[in-house]
Image (cartoon, rainbow, N blue to C red):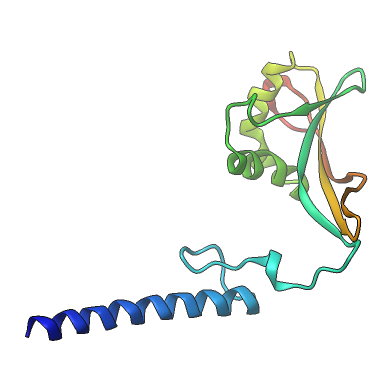
Length: 154
């Protein structure tokens, strides 16, 4: 009786694992689904990549100051993690979502003595060639003009 119960439990757990792995494989290849855990879509694997094609390696954000100089904004200096930086600063600049960016502006303006006039987001692309990985010139993905009076945007 005990052996039969253990065997049934083993088969049930194995079945659940097979269903999850199969669903994950299907979603990864077909591209269905959102950001639900544990089944997520991996767009990096869903499309073909050709030699020399631009691959997104990451984003860089810079602040444009009153004197037209640019200062890179580092998430480590702001004491926020990669994903917080992405969703609170990088992506709102790219999407021109000023309402999402407003809370981060207070800290940014304070850090640079209210001298920020714009924020830029750039794609730091790379390409894979037969000679190896090469860095490509950055592409500006978005720019938002700002005014630091109270961390507001114009």
